[in-house]
Image (cartoon, rainbow, N blue to C red):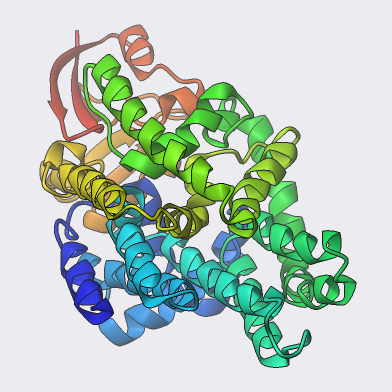
Length: 439
């Protein structure tokens, strides 16, 4: 049964996999073409992620090629591994529980979205689900020996890889380190910290530079803090909402919040009930969010996708319900929202591919240059001028107004002040081309 589920899950994740790269994916696609050393020296120092994912993808591209589909298959692979690991975790209880939990994680709409994204999130979910698998074996009171070195080694390897892939994994790793301490298993708490300590030691020189450079960026880019995730009611509510309905939205917004909110309420009422049946999994779900809130008071990181690795835990909790009808209800709801995304192009990513196809080779355009990676990926011959620092002088100008809020720039106001009049707009799903002509 599990193998059928894995095969179906794989093919479902191929639906729409060739859709356009959006900004962050295009950055990834361009970066992984660099030599391994330059990924760190030329890119990572100005990024805020560890380099392991980019190194992995660099090797992947050398073996399988750099087409969008082939690159995204790396994320699909880790998604399938996660489903298998959830099954193995549940199977330790009983096989039926393992199948139900694996089915819920396989159909979760947010995990399906990120299983197709060319970013590190699918990979880190795989590493941390592996860590949970080993951790549960380590703390199992029925184990013959409290010091199971094989599982401790596996756990620390997974946490090392997770932190070297995504710094935000520290919240779940921290929860798994803290739990044995408060149950007075002090040695286990120490043993569970080795992987994280080694990972921090390895990446510390890079992390120090990243912290310094990110501080400078916050000063230079007026509204950069908007994308980080401050502690507020909206960001907190988005965690259960997006975990339940995925990365979709529709208009009018009131309908989205009513439908999505009611479904989220159903999912989380079931989950909260099951937390009382499995307090250990409840700790693994809630403590990382609490730690993230505390951390984000000073350094904002409270965005739902940064806690994506908690969805396998929510699936294990939801599968604890004894009602088969409830499992079918949850699975059906997840499938509905998943296919709403997969089969509806209006809910897909920014269509930079189509936007770029509307430009000619070597054409000059104006936009914030730090956001030009998608255009560079799809047509590197296009000339990009930074509209923040360069004033257009041509009679006819093409502008891509993207990321303006973050940089505190109003391109329309600037173009009008320079004596231009807008003549046409072409929309490409959340991105657009504006055509301007001098009056």
